[in-house]
Image 1 (cartoon, helix red, strand yellow):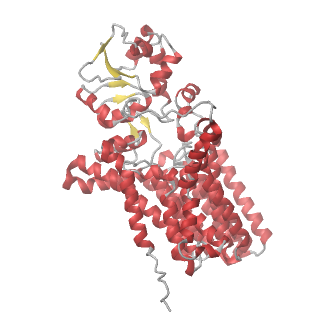
Image 2 (tube, helix red, strand yellow):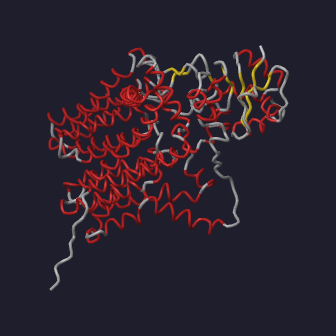
Image 3 (cartoon, one colour):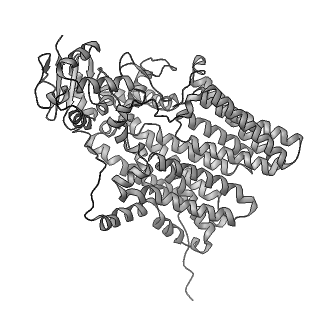
Length: 595
Protein backbone atom coordinates (compact mmCIF):
# COMPACT_ATOMS: atom_id res chain seq x y z
CA UNK A 1 0.00 0.00 0.00
CA UNK A 2 1.56 3.33 -1.11
CA UNK A 3 1.94 6.08 1.49
CA UNK A 4 -0.54 8.97 1.33
CA UNK A 5 0.45 11.95 -0.72
CA UNK A 6 1.80 14.89 1.17
CA UNK A 7 -0.64 17.75 1.49
CA UNK A 8 1.90 20.21 2.81
CA UNK A 9 1.06 23.73 1.73
CA UNK A 10 3.37 26.72 1.65
CA UNK A 11 3.09 29.13 4.52
CA UNK A 12 1.16 32.30 3.69
CA UNK A 13 4.03 34.45 4.97
CA UNK A 14 6.45 32.86 2.46
CA UNK A 15 3.97 33.22 -0.41
CA UNK A 16 3.32 36.82 0.60
CA UNK A 17 7.05 37.63 0.53
CA UNK A 18 7.50 35.98 -2.89
CA UNK A 19 4.44 37.64 -4.41
CA UNK A 20 5.43 41.00 -2.92
CA UNK A 21 8.93 40.75 -4.43
CA UNK A 22 7.50 39.82 -7.84
CA UNK A 23 5.08 42.77 -7.78
CA UNK A 24 7.80 45.22 -6.72
CA UNK A 25 10.04 44.06 -9.57
CA UNK A 26 7.22 44.09 -12.14
CA UNK A 27 6.00 47.54 -11.11
CA UNK A 28 9.58 48.81 -10.96
CA UNK A 29 10.54 47.87 -14.52
CA UNK A 30 9.41 51.20 -16.05
CA UNK A 31 11.54 53.01 -13.48
CA UNK A 32 14.55 50.88 -14.41
CA UNK A 33 14.00 51.67 -18.08
CA UNK A 34 13.36 55.42 -17.93
CA UNK A 35 14.50 56.43 -14.45
CA UNK A 36 12.17 56.67 -11.49
CA UNK A 37 11.67 60.43 -11.80
CA UNK A 38 10.12 59.99 -15.25
CA UNK A 39 7.57 57.51 -13.87
CA UNK A 40 6.05 60.22 -11.68
CA UNK A 41 2.54 61.34 -12.52
CA UNK A 42 1.67 65.01 -12.30
CA UNK A 43 0.43 64.52 -8.72
CA UNK A 44 3.53 62.51 -7.75
CA UNK A 45 5.77 65.28 -9.08
CA UNK A 46 3.99 67.99 -7.12
CA UNK A 47 4.03 65.82 -3.99
CA UNK A 48 7.80 65.62 -4.34
CA UNK A 49 7.94 69.42 -4.67
CA UNK A 50 5.79 69.76 -1.54
CA UNK A 51 8.08 67.43 0.44
CA UNK A 52 11.17 69.32 -0.75
CA UNK A 53 9.59 72.60 0.35
CA UNK A 54 8.86 71.11 3.78
CA UNK A 55 12.46 69.93 4.14
CA UNK A 56 13.66 73.37 3.00
CA UNK A 57 11.86 75.02 5.92
CA UNK A 58 8.33 75.78 4.73
CA UNK A 59 5.92 75.80 7.69
CA UNK A 60 4.14 72.62 8.74
CA UNK A 61 0.71 74.26 8.51
CA UNK A 62 1.60 76.18 5.33
CA UNK A 63 0.45 74.12 2.33
CA UNK A 64 0.77 76.97 -0.16
CA UNK A 65 2.59 76.11 -3.37
CA UNK A 66 4.17 79.51 -3.95
CA UNK A 67 5.47 78.77 -7.46
CA UNK A 68 2.07 77.67 -8.77
CA UNK A 69 0.10 80.65 -10.08
CA UNK A 70 2.33 83.11 -8.19
CA UNK A 71 2.05 84.39 -5.55
CA UNK A 72 0.74 80.90 -4.83
CA UNK A 73 -2.11 78.42 -4.37
CA UNK A 74 -3.09 76.77 -1.06
CA UNK A 75 -3.13 73.05 -1.86
CA UNK A 76 -5.74 70.62 -0.53
CA UNK A 77 -3.19 67.90 0.25
CA UNK A 78 -2.14 66.53 3.63
CA UNK A 79 1.03 66.46 5.69
CA UNK A 80 0.07 62.90 6.68
CA UNK A 81 1.66 61.81 3.39
CA UNK A 82 4.44 64.41 3.37
CA UNK A 83 5.75 63.47 6.83
CA UNK A 84 6.86 59.83 6.20
CA UNK A 85 8.33 60.76 2.82
CA UNK A 86 10.31 63.59 4.42
CA UNK A 87 11.51 61.28 7.21
CA UNK A 88 12.72 58.67 4.70
CA UNK A 89 14.67 61.30 2.75
CA UNK A 90 16.14 62.74 5.95
CA UNK A 91 17.29 59.31 7.13
CA UNK A 92 18.78 58.33 3.77
CA UNK A 93 20.31 61.70 2.83
CA UNK A 94 23.46 61.50 5.02
CA UNK A 95 24.27 58.10 3.52
CA UNK A 96 23.31 58.61 -0.14
CA UNK A 97 22.99 62.33 -0.79
CA UNK A 98 19.83 64.19 -1.74
CA UNK A 99 19.32 62.73 -5.22
CA UNK A 100 19.78 59.06 -4.34
CA UNK A 101 17.80 59.51 -1.11
CA UNK A 102 14.87 60.75 -3.19
CA UNK A 103 15.28 57.89 -5.68
CA UNK A 104 15.25 55.25 -2.94
CA UNK A 105 12.29 56.90 -1.21
CA UNK A 106 10.33 56.89 -4.47
CA UNK A 107 10.88 53.13 -4.67
CA UNK A 108 10.62 52.20 -0.99
CA UNK A 109 7.41 54.02 -0.07
CA UNK A 110 5.00 52.39 -2.57
CA UNK A 111 6.76 49.02 -2.16
CA UNK A 112 6.28 48.99 1.61
CA UNK A 113 2.65 49.99 1.20
CA UNK A 114 2.14 47.15 -1.30
CA UNK A 115 3.45 44.70 1.29
CA UNK A 116 1.08 46.13 3.88
CA UNK A 117 -1.87 45.82 1.46
CA UNK A 118 -1.08 42.14 0.78
CA UNK A 119 -0.81 41.38 4.51
CA UNK A 120 -4.04 43.19 5.35
CA UNK A 121 -5.95 41.45 2.54
CA UNK A 122 -4.71 38.04 3.69
CA UNK A 123 -5.68 38.83 7.30
CA UNK A 124 -9.17 40.02 6.33
CA UNK A 125 -9.80 36.79 4.39
CA UNK A 126 -8.35 34.62 7.15
CA UNK A 127 -10.36 36.10 9.99
CA UNK A 128 -13.62 35.60 8.07
CA UNK A 129 -13.04 31.85 7.68
CA UNK A 130 -12.99 28.85 9.99
CA UNK A 131 -9.54 27.90 11.36
CA UNK A 132 -9.25 24.87 9.07
CA UNK A 133 -9.82 27.05 5.98
CA UNK A 134 -7.76 30.03 7.10
CA UNK A 135 -4.43 29.21 5.48
CA UNK A 136 -5.89 28.49 2.04
CA UNK A 137 -8.04 31.59 2.23
CA UNK A 138 -4.99 33.70 3.02
CA UNK A 139 -3.05 32.20 0.10
CA UNK A 140 -5.95 32.85 -2.29
CA UNK A 141 -6.40 36.42 -1.00
CA UNK A 142 -2.72 37.17 -1.61
CA UNK A 143 -3.03 35.93 -5.19
CA UNK A 144 -6.22 37.88 -5.95
CA UNK A 145 -4.87 41.07 -4.36
CA UNK A 146 -1.73 40.77 -6.47
CA UNK A 147 -3.96 40.56 -9.55
CA UNK A 148 -6.13 43.57 -8.66
CA UNK A 149 -4.95 45.39 -11.75
CA UNK A 150 -6.92 48.66 -11.30
CA UNK A 151 -5.19 49.22 -7.95
CA UNK A 152 -1.62 48.21 -8.83
CA UNK A 153 -0.84 51.44 -10.66
CA UNK A 154 -0.95 53.19 -7.29
CA UNK A 155 1.87 50.98 -5.99
CA UNK A 156 4.33 51.33 -8.86
CA UNK A 157 7.79 52.79 -8.25
CA UNK A 158 7.40 56.56 -7.97
CA UNK A 159 3.80 56.49 -6.72
CA UNK A 160 4.03 58.88 -3.77
CA UNK A 161 0.63 60.48 -4.17
CA UNK A 162 -1.98 59.73 -1.50
CA UNK A 163 -3.98 56.94 -3.18
CA UNK A 164 -1.83 53.99 -2.07
CA UNK A 165 -1.79 55.12 1.56
CA UNK A 166 -5.56 55.59 1.48
CA UNK A 167 -6.04 52.07 0.12
CA UNK A 168 -3.91 50.62 2.93
CA UNK A 169 -5.76 52.63 5.57
CA UNK A 170 -9.11 51.51 4.15
CA UNK A 171 -8.01 47.85 4.26
CA UNK A 172 -7.01 48.39 7.89
CA UNK A 173 -10.39 50.00 8.53
CA UNK A 174 -12.22 47.01 6.99
CA UNK A 175 -10.10 44.54 8.95
CA UNK A 176 -10.85 46.23 12.26
CA UNK A 177 -14.50 47.15 11.77
CA UNK A 178 -15.40 43.62 10.64
CA UNK A 179 -14.21 42.37 14.03
CA UNK A 180 -15.80 45.26 15.96
CA UNK A 181 -18.57 43.19 17.55
CA UNK A 182 -16.07 40.94 19.32
CA UNK A 183 -13.08 43.19 20.13
CA UNK A 184 -13.22 46.71 21.54
CA UNK A 185 -9.56 47.38 20.72
CA UNK A 186 -10.23 46.64 17.06
CA UNK A 187 -13.22 48.98 17.22
CA UNK A 188 -11.08 51.86 18.49
CA UNK A 189 -8.46 51.11 15.84
CA UNK A 190 -11.14 51.21 13.15
CA UNK A 191 -12.04 54.72 14.29
CA UNK A 192 -8.39 55.74 14.06
CA UNK A 193 -7.98 54.27 10.55
CA UNK A 194 -11.13 56.00 9.36
CA UNK A 195 -10.10 59.40 10.71
CA UNK A 196 -6.57 59.02 9.37
CA UNK A 197 -7.86 58.10 5.91
CA UNK A 198 -10.05 61.22 5.85
CA UNK A 199 -7.12 63.33 7.02
CA UNK A 200 -5.24 62.14 3.91
CA UNK A 201 -8.12 62.75 1.48
CA UNK A 202 -11.86 62.46 1.11
CA UNK A 203 -12.08 59.73 -1.55
CA UNK A 204 -13.02 57.05 1.01
CA UNK A 205 -15.63 59.18 2.80
CA UNK A 206 -18.69 57.33 1.36
CA UNK A 207 -17.33 53.92 2.41
CA UNK A 208 -16.32 55.09 5.90
CA UNK A 209 -19.66 56.87 6.39
CA UNK A 210 -21.68 53.80 5.38
CA UNK A 211 -19.64 51.50 7.62
CA UNK A 212 -20.08 53.92 10.52
CA UNK A 213 -23.83 53.92 9.89
CA UNK A 214 -23.72 50.12 10.12
CA UNK A 215 -22.14 50.42 13.58
CA UNK A 216 -25.00 52.68 14.64
CA UNK A 217 -27.46 50.10 13.29
CA UNK A 218 -25.70 47.37 15.26
CA UNK A 219 -25.99 49.41 18.46
CA UNK A 220 -29.67 50.11 17.81
CA UNK A 221 -30.38 46.42 17.20
CA UNK A 222 -28.33 44.79 19.98
CA UNK A 223 -28.13 47.54 22.58
CA UNK A 224 -26.07 46.80 25.70
CA UNK A 225 -24.63 43.61 24.15
CA UNK A 226 -22.38 45.75 21.91
CA UNK A 227 -22.13 48.82 24.11
CA UNK A 228 -18.40 48.53 24.77
CA UNK A 229 -17.18 48.12 21.15
CA UNK A 230 -19.61 50.77 19.90
CA UNK A 231 -18.31 53.25 22.47
CA UNK A 232 -14.73 52.31 21.56
CA UNK A 233 -15.42 53.02 17.89
CA UNK A 234 -17.12 56.34 18.64
CA UNK A 235 -14.36 57.43 20.99
CA UNK A 236 -11.66 56.32 18.54
CA UNK A 237 -13.26 58.22 15.66
CA UNK A 238 -13.90 61.41 17.65
CA UNK A 239 -10.65 61.40 19.61
CA UNK A 240 -8.35 60.64 16.67
CA UNK A 241 -10.05 63.21 14.41
CA UNK A 242 -9.64 65.90 17.10
CA UNK A 243 -6.00 64.93 17.61
CA UNK A 244 -5.35 65.01 13.86
CA UNK A 245 -6.97 68.44 13.67
CA UNK A 246 -4.55 69.72 16.31
CA UNK A 247 -1.60 68.20 14.45
CA UNK A 248 -2.58 69.24 10.93
CA UNK A 249 -4.80 72.33 11.02
CA UNK A 250 -4.23 75.86 12.31
CA UNK A 251 -7.04 76.83 14.64
CA UNK A 252 -8.13 79.82 12.54
CA UNK A 253 -8.89 77.50 9.59
CA UNK A 254 -11.65 75.47 11.26
CA UNK A 255 -14.40 77.97 10.42
CA UNK A 256 -13.55 77.99 6.70
CA UNK A 257 -15.74 75.90 4.38
CA UNK A 258 -12.91 73.63 3.21
CA UNK A 259 -14.99 71.02 1.38
CA UNK A 260 -12.27 69.20 -0.61
CA UNK A 261 -9.90 68.27 2.23
CA UNK A 262 -9.68 67.60 5.95
CA UNK A 263 -10.88 70.73 7.72
CA UNK A 264 -13.75 72.10 9.75
CA UNK A 265 -16.56 70.34 7.82
CA UNK A 266 -14.98 66.86 7.97
CA UNK A 267 -13.90 67.41 11.56
CA UNK A 268 -17.51 68.20 12.43
CA UNK A 269 -18.70 64.99 10.77
CA UNK A 270 -16.00 62.78 12.34
CA UNK A 271 -15.88 64.20 15.85
CA UNK A 272 -19.61 64.94 15.87
CA UNK A 273 -20.40 61.48 14.55
CA UNK A 274 -18.26 59.84 17.23
CA UNK A 275 -19.88 61.93 19.96
CA UNK A 276 -23.36 61.17 18.56
CA UNK A 277 -22.59 57.45 18.73
CA UNK A 278 -21.48 57.83 22.35
CA UNK A 279 -24.71 59.70 23.11
CA UNK A 280 -26.82 56.90 21.62
CA UNK A 281 -24.79 54.42 23.68
CA UNK A 282 -25.55 56.48 26.77
CA UNK A 283 -29.26 56.33 26.04
CA UNK A 284 -29.01 52.56 25.47
CA UNK A 285 -27.33 52.15 28.85
CA UNK A 286 -30.00 54.14 30.68
CA UNK A 287 -33.12 52.86 28.90
CA UNK A 288 -33.52 49.54 27.15
CA UNK A 289 -35.61 49.06 24.01
CA UNK A 290 -34.97 49.01 20.27
CA UNK A 291 -37.36 51.89 19.53
CA UNK A 292 -35.76 54.07 22.19
CA UNK A 293 -32.33 53.52 20.67
CA UNK A 294 -33.72 54.04 17.18
CA UNK A 295 -35.28 57.37 18.18
CA UNK A 296 -32.06 58.46 19.90
CA UNK A 297 -29.97 57.64 16.81
CA UNK A 298 -32.43 59.50 14.56
CA UNK A 299 -32.33 62.62 16.73
CA UNK A 300 -28.52 62.51 17.01
CA UNK A 301 -28.14 62.05 13.25
CA UNK A 302 -30.57 64.87 12.47
CA UNK A 303 -28.75 67.23 14.84
CA UNK A 304 -25.38 66.35 13.31
CA UNK A 305 -26.52 66.79 9.70
CA UNK A 306 -28.43 69.93 10.59
CA UNK A 307 -25.33 71.46 12.19
CA UNK A 308 -23.29 70.49 9.12
CA UNK A 309 -25.71 71.99 6.60
CA UNK A 310 -26.13 75.13 8.66
CA UNK A 311 -22.39 75.65 9.21
CA UNK A 312 -21.10 74.61 5.78
CA UNK A 313 -23.93 74.77 3.22
CA UNK A 314 -21.51 75.08 0.29
CA UNK A 315 -20.09 71.63 1.03
CA UNK A 316 -23.27 69.96 -0.19
CA UNK A 317 -22.24 70.72 -3.80
CA UNK A 318 -19.89 68.67 -5.96
CA UNK A 319 -16.19 69.00 -5.05
CA UNK A 320 -15.63 70.26 -8.61
CA UNK A 321 -18.37 72.91 -8.44
CA UNK A 322 -15.76 75.65 -8.12
CA UNK A 323 -14.02 74.69 -11.37
CA UNK A 324 -14.78 77.19 -14.13
CA UNK A 325 -16.98 75.70 -16.90
CA UNK A 326 -14.34 76.58 -19.50
CA UNK A 327 -11.78 74.49 -17.59
CA UNK A 328 -14.22 71.62 -17.23
CA UNK A 329 -14.46 71.31 -21.00
CA UNK A 330 -10.82 72.21 -21.66
CA UNK A 331 -9.13 70.08 -18.97
CA UNK A 332 -11.21 68.32 -16.29
CA UNK A 333 -13.43 66.51 -18.76
CA UNK A 334 -10.46 64.61 -20.20
CA UNK A 335 -9.03 63.48 -16.84
CA UNK A 336 -9.53 59.71 -16.94
CA UNK A 337 -9.93 59.14 -13.20
CA UNK A 338 -12.86 61.56 -13.01
CA UNK A 339 -14.85 59.78 -15.75
CA UNK A 340 -18.11 58.01 -14.92
CA UNK A 341 -19.03 54.49 -16.00
CA UNK A 342 -21.19 55.87 -18.82
CA UNK A 343 -18.28 57.89 -20.21
CA UNK A 344 -15.97 54.86 -19.96
CA UNK A 345 -18.59 52.74 -21.75
CA UNK A 346 -18.55 55.19 -24.64
CA UNK A 347 -14.78 55.52 -24.91
CA UNK A 348 -13.27 52.20 -23.75
CA UNK A 349 -16.05 49.62 -23.24
CA UNK A 350 -13.54 46.77 -23.42
CA UNK A 351 -12.24 47.85 -19.98
CA UNK A 352 -15.60 47.73 -18.20
CA UNK A 353 -15.10 44.12 -17.07
CA UNK A 354 -11.64 44.90 -15.71
CA UNK A 355 -12.91 47.76 -13.57
CA UNK A 356 -16.40 46.67 -12.53
CA UNK A 357 -16.97 42.92 -12.94
CA UNK A 358 -14.91 41.75 -9.96
CA UNK A 359 -16.41 44.02 -7.28
CA UNK A 360 -19.90 43.34 -8.69
CA UNK A 361 -19.30 39.59 -8.46
CA UNK A 362 -17.94 40.00 -4.95
CA UNK A 363 -21.02 41.97 -3.90
CA UNK A 364 -23.13 38.97 -4.93
CA UNK A 365 -20.94 36.60 -2.91
CA UNK A 366 -21.05 38.91 0.12
CA UNK A 367 -24.83 39.15 -0.08
CA UNK A 368 -25.15 35.35 -0.22
CA UNK A 369 -22.77 34.99 2.73
CA UNK A 370 -24.68 37.64 4.70
CA UNK A 371 -27.96 35.76 4.19
CA UNK A 372 -26.59 32.30 4.98
CA UNK A 373 -24.16 33.00 7.82
CA UNK A 374 -24.65 32.46 11.53
CA UNK A 375 -25.92 35.36 13.70
CA UNK A 376 -22.44 35.70 15.23
CA UNK A 377 -20.97 36.45 11.77
CA UNK A 378 -23.81 38.52 10.35
CA UNK A 379 -22.49 41.99 11.23
CA UNK A 380 -19.13 41.12 9.66
CA UNK A 381 -20.82 40.42 6.35
CA UNK A 382 -23.25 43.32 6.62
CA UNK A 383 -20.52 45.90 7.17
CA UNK A 384 -18.31 44.30 4.48
CA UNK A 385 -21.14 44.37 1.94
CA UNK A 386 -22.12 47.95 2.76
CA UNK A 387 -18.51 49.19 2.55
CA UNK A 388 -17.90 47.47 -0.79
CA UNK A 389 -21.23 48.71 -2.15
CA UNK A 390 -20.28 52.29 -1.29
CA UNK A 391 -16.92 51.90 -3.04
CA UNK A 392 -18.59 50.34 -6.07
CA UNK A 393 -21.13 53.15 -6.23
CA UNK A 394 -18.34 55.71 -6.04
CA UNK A 395 -16.51 53.96 -8.90
CA UNK A 396 -19.63 54.31 -11.06
CA UNK A 397 -19.50 58.07 -10.48
CA UNK A 398 -15.73 58.43 -10.79
CA UNK A 399 -13.33 55.83 -12.16
CA UNK A 400 -10.81 56.60 -9.41
CA UNK A 401 -13.01 54.64 -6.98
CA UNK A 402 -12.47 51.40 -8.91
CA UNK A 403 -8.97 50.88 -7.49
CA UNK A 404 -10.15 50.73 -3.87
CA UNK A 405 -13.27 48.76 -4.82
CA UNK A 406 -11.23 46.02 -6.51
CA UNK A 407 -8.57 45.64 -3.84
CA UNK A 408 -11.08 45.64 -0.96
CA UNK A 409 -13.15 43.10 -2.88
CA UNK A 410 -10.16 40.71 -3.13
CA UNK A 411 -10.24 39.24 0.41
CA UNK A 412 -14.04 39.47 0.58
CA UNK A 413 -14.36 37.47 -2.65
CA UNK A 414 -12.18 34.70 -1.25
CA UNK A 415 -14.04 34.60 2.07
CA UNK A 416 -17.40 34.68 0.28
CA UNK A 417 -16.34 31.83 -1.99
CA UNK A 418 -15.38 29.75 1.04
CA UNK A 419 -18.81 30.41 2.55
CA UNK A 420 -20.61 29.57 -0.68
CA UNK A 421 -19.08 26.17 -1.42
CA UNK A 422 -16.84 24.64 1.18
CA UNK A 423 -15.74 21.70 -1.03
CA UNK A 424 -13.66 23.95 -3.25
CA UNK A 425 -11.42 24.78 -0.30
CA UNK A 426 -9.67 21.40 -0.45
CA UNK A 427 -6.12 21.41 -1.80
CA UNK A 428 -5.35 24.19 -4.27
CA UNK A 429 -8.90 24.45 -5.64
CA UNK A 430 -9.59 27.69 -3.81
CA UNK A 431 -6.48 29.32 -5.29
CA UNK A 432 -7.47 28.15 -8.78
CA UNK A 433 -10.97 29.55 -8.38
CA UNK A 434 -9.47 32.80 -7.09
CA UNK A 435 -7.29 33.01 -10.20
CA UNK A 436 -10.32 32.51 -12.44
CA UNK A 437 -12.32 35.20 -10.64
CA UNK A 438 -9.50 37.76 -10.29
CA UNK A 439 -9.72 41.27 -11.80
CA UNK A 440 -6.82 40.40 -14.13
CA UNK A 441 -8.70 37.40 -15.60
CA UNK A 442 -12.01 39.23 -15.93
CA UNK A 443 -10.27 42.25 -17.43
CA UNK A 444 -8.42 40.02 -19.88
CA UNK A 445 -11.70 38.47 -20.98
CA UNK A 446 -13.11 41.92 -21.68
CA UNK A 447 -10.08 42.94 -23.71
CA UNK A 448 -10.14 39.67 -25.68
CA UNK A 449 -13.88 39.40 -26.33
CA UNK A 450 -14.89 43.01 -26.99
CA UNK A 451 -13.17 43.43 -30.39
CA UNK A 452 -15.36 40.64 -31.77
CA UNK A 453 -18.49 42.58 -30.81
CA UNK A 454 -17.12 46.00 -31.73
CA UNK A 455 -15.85 45.20 -35.22
CA UNK A 456 -16.59 48.10 -37.50
CA UNK A 457 -17.88 50.39 -34.76
CA UNK A 458 -16.41 53.78 -34.02
CA UNK A 459 -16.85 56.41 -31.38
CA UNK A 460 -14.77 58.60 -29.10
CA UNK A 461 -11.66 57.10 -27.54
CA UNK A 462 -9.61 57.95 -24.47
CA UNK A 463 -6.37 59.38 -25.82
CA UNK A 464 -3.30 58.46 -23.78
CA UNK A 465 -0.43 60.80 -24.69
CA UNK A 466 3.22 59.86 -24.47
CA UNK A 467 4.48 61.73 -21.36
CA UNK A 468 7.76 62.64 -23.03
CA UNK A 469 6.19 63.96 -26.23
CA UNK A 470 3.61 65.91 -24.22
CA UNK A 471 6.31 67.56 -22.07
CA UNK A 472 5.19 65.97 -18.80
CA UNK A 473 8.37 64.21 -17.70
CA UNK A 474 10.94 65.64 -15.33
CA UNK A 475 13.78 64.77 -17.72
CA UNK A 476 12.14 66.76 -20.53
CA UNK A 477 11.80 69.77 -18.22
CA UNK A 478 15.32 69.49 -16.80
CA UNK A 479 16.84 71.56 -19.62
CA UNK A 480 14.73 74.52 -18.51
CA UNK A 481 16.78 74.71 -15.32
CA UNK A 482 19.57 76.36 -17.32
CA UNK A 483 17.41 79.45 -17.79
CA UNK A 484 17.33 82.20 -15.15
CA UNK A 485 14.35 81.53 -12.84
CA UNK A 486 11.18 83.22 -14.02
CA UNK A 487 7.46 82.88 -14.55
CA UNK A 488 6.53 80.37 -17.25
CA UNK A 489 3.28 79.99 -19.18
CA UNK A 490 3.13 76.27 -20.04
CA UNK A 491 0.55 73.53 -20.72
CA UNK A 492 -1.47 72.38 -17.71
CA UNK A 493 0.09 68.93 -17.41
CA UNK A 494 3.63 70.30 -17.84
CA UNK A 495 3.38 72.46 -14.71
CA UNK A 496 4.31 69.85 -12.03
CA UNK A 497 7.33 68.57 -13.98
CA UNK A 498 8.64 72.14 -14.41
CA UNK A 499 8.20 72.80 -10.69
CA UNK A 500 10.03 69.57 -9.81
CA UNK A 501 12.92 70.02 -12.26
CA UNK A 502 13.53 73.78 -12.06
CA UNK A 503 13.19 76.89 -9.93
CA UNK A 504 10.68 78.45 -12.34
CA UNK A 505 7.12 79.38 -11.38
CA UNK A 506 4.21 78.22 -13.54
CA UNK A 507 0.64 79.39 -13.92
CA UNK A 508 -1.19 76.27 -15.07
CA UNK A 509 -1.39 72.97 -13.21
CA UNK A 510 -3.90 70.05 -13.12
CA UNK A 511 -5.56 70.99 -9.82
CA UNK A 512 -9.16 72.01 -9.29
CA UNK A 513 -8.21 74.87 -6.95
CA UNK A 514 -6.05 76.49 -9.62
CA UNK A 515 -8.87 78.25 -11.46
CA UNK A 516 -7.01 81.53 -11.76
CA UNK A 517 -3.74 80.18 -13.13
CA UNK A 518 -5.34 77.76 -15.57
CA UNK A 519 -7.71 80.43 -16.89
CA UNK A 520 -4.81 82.86 -17.25
CA UNK A 521 -3.01 80.37 -19.49
CA UNK A 522 -6.09 79.54 -21.58
CA UNK A 523 -7.10 83.17 -22.06
CA UNK A 524 -3.60 84.35 -22.94
CA UNK A 525 -2.90 81.52 -25.38
CA UNK A 526 -6.25 81.81 -27.17
CA UNK A 527 -6.15 85.60 -27.43
CA UNK A 528 -4.94 87.38 -30.53
CA UNK A 529 -1.17 88.03 -30.29
CA UNK A 530 -1.56 91.75 -29.59
CA UNK A 531 -4.15 91.21 -26.86
CA UNK A 532 -2.06 88.37 -25.41
CA UNK A 533 0.89 90.75 -24.99
CA UNK A 534 -1.02 92.83 -22.45
CA UNK A 535 -2.11 89.71 -20.57
CA UNK A 536 1.45 88.38 -20.41
CA UNK A 537 2.79 91.71 -19.18
CA UNK A 538 0.07 91.99 -16.54
CA UNK A 539 1.12 88.56 -15.19
CA UNK A 540 4.84 89.39 -15.51
CA UNK A 541 5.42 86.29 -17.66
CA UNK A 542 9.06 85.62 -18.58
CA UNK A 543 8.75 82.50 -20.73
CA UNK A 544 6.21 80.59 -22.80
CA UNK A 545 6.47 76.85 -23.44
CA UNK A 546 4.64 75.47 -26.48
CA UNK A 547 4.41 71.70 -26.76
CA UNK A 548 3.00 70.32 -29.99
CA UNK A 549 2.42 66.88 -28.42
CA UNK A 550 0.24 68.15 -25.60
CA UNK A 551 -3.54 68.05 -25.46
CA UNK A 552 -3.49 71.70 -24.46
CA UNK A 553 -1.88 72.78 -27.72
CA UNK A 554 -4.40 70.83 -29.80
CA UNK A 555 -7.34 72.28 -27.88
CA UNK A 556 -5.96 75.83 -27.87
CA UNK A 557 -5.59 75.73 -31.65
CA UNK A 558 -9.07 74.25 -32.01
CA UNK A 559 -10.61 76.93 -29.78
CA UNK A 560 -8.75 79.84 -31.40
CA UNK A 561 -7.19 79.06 -34.82
CA UNK A 562 -5.74 82.58 -34.90
CA UNK A 563 -4.81 82.80 -31.23
CA UNK A 564 -1.30 83.09 -29.81
CA UNK A 565 -0.90 79.31 -29.35
CA UNK A 566 -1.86 78.65 -32.97
CA UNK A 567 0.60 81.27 -34.22
CA UNK A 568 3.42 79.87 -32.09
CA UNK A 569 2.61 76.31 -33.18
CA UNK A 570 3.17 77.43 -36.77
CA UNK A 571 6.38 79.21 -35.81
CA UNK A 572 4.82 82.63 -36.33
CA UNK A 573 6.00 84.54 -33.26
CA UNK A 574 4.99 88.16 -32.61
CA UNK A 575 7.83 90.63 -32.17
CA UNK A 576 7.64 90.59 -28.37
CA UNK A 577 8.65 86.89 -28.25
CA UNK A 578 11.97 85.31 -29.20
CA UNK A 579 12.73 81.57 -29.30
CA UNK A 580 15.36 80.27 -26.83
CA UNK A 581 17.13 77.80 -29.09
CA UNK A 582 19.55 76.61 -26.42
CA UNK A 583 16.87 74.74 -24.46
CA UNK A 584 14.25 74.10 -27.15
CA UNK A 585 13.82 70.52 -28.38
CA UNK A 586 12.00 68.79 -31.24
CA UNK A 587 8.28 69.06 -30.52
CA UNK A 588 8.46 71.95 -28.08
CA UNK A 589 9.84 75.46 -28.00
CA UNK A 590 10.69 77.96 -25.28
CA UNK A 591 9.90 81.60 -26.05
CA UNK A 592 11.30 84.47 -24.02
CA UNK A 593 9.06 87.50 -23.50
CA UNK A 594 10.97 90.64 -24.44
CA UNK A 595 10.69 93.31 -21.77
